[in-house]
Length: 432
Ligand SMILES: Cc1ncc(COP(=O)(O)O)c(C=O)c1O
Image (cartoon, rainbow, N blue to C red; front, side, top):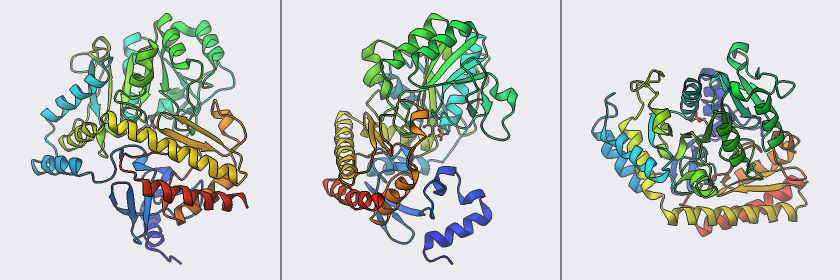
């Protein structure tokens, strides 16, 4: 029997939508219970359809960097939609957004807009294969790059073996040109390139993995990828869908790569650049990007690509993302990360608090996590207890121990205090 409005609506959703959700992690399967149905957000807070208020540390999985319903974004979006939601023709908004991206990430000489991160990466992979006239793509276990067939792949039994589908419906043909390696393992990458380097079109990596929890690159791993790909004439695709314009003005690459002296051939962006609307992009050197149709022969298209409302929201959001925003995000992430880690320590809960810029997460295990195998043995029962206690106390965090937490620039001192008080209670509960 449903007792809350969320439960009532979820039981209805289950009749009409597979699993009741439009994207699997929302279903709470890894923590149990019923997902909350949200109907309003303002600044750092969201409200569910039962009227309960939460401090939001999910932020729509990244896009709501400036907080919910920010007046600047609302005003621009309202104006854009009043002029029509779509023309299916070129518009000023996409030019302005492309220029903004180029100014923040100079290595992105050209940008193509799409509607989701999945599409951005899928297109980057096609482009890399066309640019190199090679088939093989290398990715790392635990990195997520959207749900295109070639990337829904798990590791084969040895490094030189080809990937296996990790979803029914993905054919061996679609996965056989993808090789899955262990993240942060230079030796494996070097061995693979020594054996098959001239067959590899691209190495695809998250700028810092944050889809298995936060696992920063160690020992200049990104630079090693850039150097290795260059040496063998392969491309490096840096997936900044999560980190782009969140970690710094220029994303992860702007904060690290540019100073460390490595540059990927292609970037993918999403989340923040759409300000909560379906918008993503790929970018890179003009030489490679101009292979895309209609300048070149690599086909890619989209009815709603570069949509005027989405580009208005993205541009308005980026306008809010100045140096002071990044300082604020970094500060809030540190306060929360250190405070929550202290609460877990006080309760005697083994965990690894890991961060990369203002992204952070807590692995419920002993020891430091360098790759997906390290991350797997988490105590997910303990995480579930921690999660539900936080939720009951009005703190919404990602419903899985394998996800990054997202801060917004709208978080207040009172929000931080509320989260840290709740974390102490939740940690005690989880330890019992
Ligand atoms: C690094 C990364 N790449 C690609 C994607 C796919 O983006 P989308 O969900 O917009 O298709 C995601 C989504 O979380 C992501 O985190």
